Amino acid sequence: MADIARMAGVSTATVSRALSGSALIPEATRQRITDLAQSLNYRVNVGAANLRKRDVQTVGVVILGESMQAISDPFLLSILGTVADTLDEHGMSLLLTRLKEGQSHRLSEMVEGGQVNGLIVIGQLTWHDHLNKLAARGIPMAVWGACLPDALYPMVGGDNEQGGYLATQHLIAQGCKSIAYFGDLSHPEAGARHQGYLRALHEAGLQEDPRLQQSFLFGDTRIRASIDQWLDRAQSFDAVFAASDVTAISIIGALKERGIDVPGRVKVVGYDDIALAAHLHPSLSSVRQPTVDAGKALVSLLLGAIAGQPKRTVVLPAQLVVRESTQ
Image 1 (cartoon, helix red, strand yellow):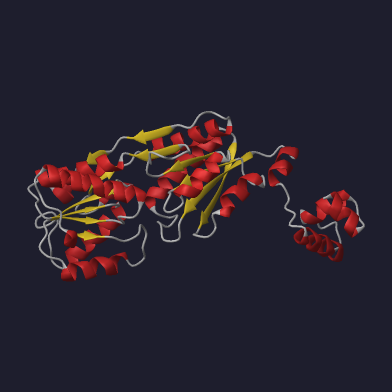
Image 2 (image 1 turned 45 degrees about the vertical axis):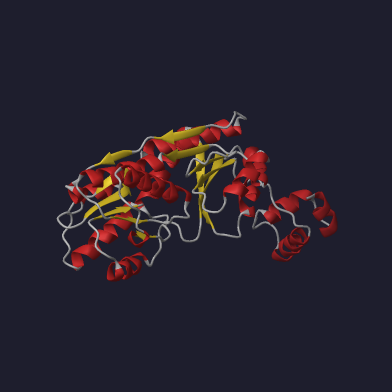
C-alpha cells in the first residue's frame, strides 16, 4: 500500500479509501490507484480489515463441481442450514460459493487473502489430491465426502459402502433378483455405495450385470432423458437402487408413465432420505444420512483445524428407512 501511495502521489489512507470504494475519493484518483494496484497484483487483505473493524469471522463454504447437485438440492440445503446455524452459535458468518474445474487456486486464495478464516468443502470429485496439498500447507478446512484412507484433511462422511449394502440387501430380502444401480461410478461417494451394492449381490450369490448399471453425475440436468433411454433398452429388472433420492424420484416418475407399478413390479430405494421422501406416493425407502450431525461435525472439525488440532475423521452411520416403494 505504501508503494502504491508513493507511485500515485497520495497518502496510504487515500489508497485504503480508494480500494475500499469510498465516495470521498475523486473518481480519477480512485481509478489511478486501482490501476496501480492491479499492475502490482495487490489484493486487500479482507481478514485484516475485518479484524481491524472487529467484524465477525467468516467461514468459506465451497461446493465443488460444475455438474454436482444444484445448491437448491434438498440434501445440500439440509447440510448448509445446519452449518449456518452452528457457525452462528459460534459468532461466525458463512460465505457460500461454488467452484468449477480449473478454479482450484481459489481455495487457497480465499484463506491466504484473508477473505475467510477457513473452509468447509462439500464434495471431493477430482479434487482429492489438491485438497491433500492444501492440507499439507496448513490451510484449515473440513471436507464432506467419501472418507478416503489417504486423506490428509479432516473429513466428515456417511458410511457409503454400508449404506449401499443395506439398500441392496433389503431389496434381495424382498425377493428381488435383478437389481439395477443408478449412480456415478467415478464419484467417491456414489462409487462406495456401488461397492456395497456389489457386496450384497455377491453374498446372495447374484451375478453383477453391467446392463443393469447406469452411470451419470449427481444433479445432471439430463437425468430424466438418461433414465428414459436406459428403460428403452434395459432388460428385465425387478428393483432399482439409486445413489440419490432425487434420482430415485425421477425413476419412479418414469416407471409410472410407462404403466410400471412401484412397488408391485419394481421396487425402488434411494439415498439421503430427504424430507420429501416420506411424502411421495408411494413414499420412498431410502438410506438416511444424518445431515444435522454432519453439519455440526463439519464446523467442529474446522474449528479444530483452525486451532491447530490433529486431523480427525468422522464417519456417520448409515440407516435404511423402509417405506412403501419397497413393500
